[in-house]
Image (cartoon, rainbow, N blue to C red; front, side, top):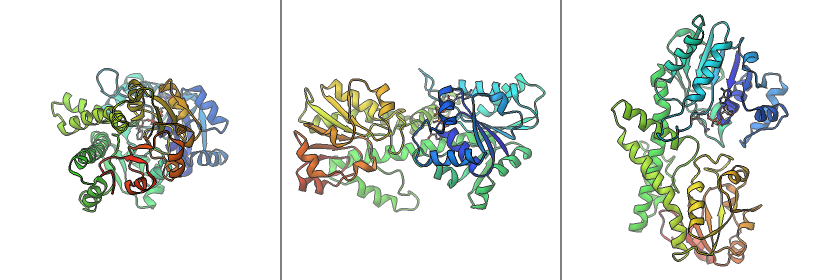
Length: 437
Ligand code: NAD
């Protein structure tokens, strides 16, 4: 099949490369000339494990190419995917659909012959109908179907998630479009991946419901962690104790600083707004949004308290800035709340992140970016672990202690054990666990 992918971001580039790897002919189109220049030169504009090799292989095989020119890429396509951003609209939290609408107009101008237009971006219920209306308005004669096919991949494990998903969701209203979608995902059929065919509105809502549920699970365990701290319980054992119940499941029960990233914050808010418009409020999700926002803001006070109530003139080492490990994505990362609050409390901040420093430098000013975890520690008054990158999980604790002015660690991801810290003599503060095991 011939596929055009509009948007070569975290979703478009991975999906495009994976479809090419399935054997389809794929052109990835973006408006960002710098991204296309890099891709054509064999460089990957984002950090995603395994992507560079996958792109290179498929370019070499002649199945994957990149272009700035939608008109040249689209006329023969069987399917055109819209994988552009849908950020929160400034001021009201609704999904900003301007990129999706624009892409729909642009597709309409150049499409030729029967084309399936697939919305892969996360979009509110009703967007498929809007895309259909836009195309119909621009090209009343066009022969096309609009399909919803939300993406569930996770940054950092995106290729695996795309190729071995728990399920694929397709919202298609007609048989012709279903046939094209079935053909596109044929390699997954052979793997017996469940493909959920449904109508467009249901498919659009499935994506928001999934993200809202996961955000709720995280927020639930975060509140349990706070309660654990008050009553002397251990949240990791609570999570294990409840997660072994098959009805609950053990995933997404890690207490931490609050969720961030390019999806959960904006998608939970967009769902809340959509539900309000339809006068069917999602009060649980409203509470999740509020609790999580407050939580991220409160994390700095844990550092202040661990340092005896003041950070004035102190140096805080920060390990990890991205919203999670194995990505360079800084969108809505907890560090964007925590680091400015540390600085506002008088601290000097020295930070390291394995992949996110370039992105972070544009967002977090006036902090010292250093090259490696140990370099943050020299003479520091405290160290905070914000993101659980693997390379922070096995630090030489004796070295950590000897390098710091005062050995205080605030571990917002619970990657160490309180007893090992006690043994080394580092004052250790984590989330929802007794100070010493
Ligand atoms: P992104 O910001 O990384 O990439 C979007 C790309 O689209 C950019 O490169 C931009 O230049 C390009 N673009 C915008 N308008 C264009 C146009 N008219 N023509 C050509 N290119 C255009 O976004 P992302 O993280 O890949 O997310 C895309 C969508 O997928 C969003 O709706 C998001 O919610 C959803 N999603 C994201 C993830 C994730 O982990 N990032 C997971 C699942 C779903």
